[in-house]
Length: 228
Image (cartoon, rainbow, N blue to C red; front, top):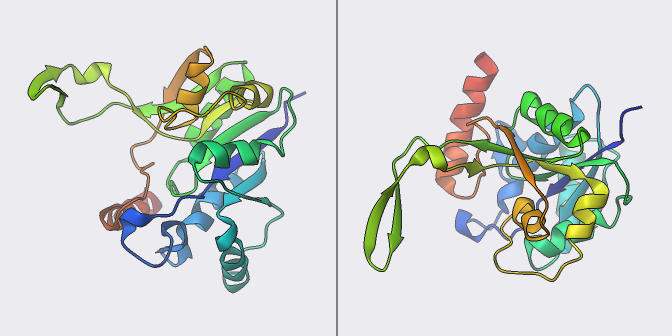
């Protein structure tokens, strides 16, 4: 019997770098809010997970209004976020059982992740290990320290994406530890607990929309993915 699947979509950020009054997760990407496109990836999997959405409490009404406007009908559960990503994820995890269920934790502003990447993550997590999607950088890499710059082999560098996928009991336990400023994602939280991380191949289109330039790039990438 396959373990139960969950998708924890985190969209509780303020989006200050977007420079707009509209939160980045609600900006339109080819006619739909970014967040709807992100959630739709999970709702169109062959084995649809149960979706938990984390939003700032002040934005929940806006989200519900947008769902009516775009006829976006889902049975997902909504959880208010916290002051940090760590707290927001922890709030969402409270709705999940502490068992062998699989939970894919995904940034709400990464709408271009592919089904193939999501399935790779679930498959890896089903084997009892944590799955982290990554890509290698194409740019040159240098280490800056004390005003000096040292070239660093880019083959040794991984760009980390989401969904980062775990057994529910494992990641819930990791989120019981005290918060640290070093926790930039779920992989860093798990690593601090001594959990061994395993990587899967991500997709380069799976960018995190944070700035206006990212939104422009996502529009081009989405059109290209539609024609593939």
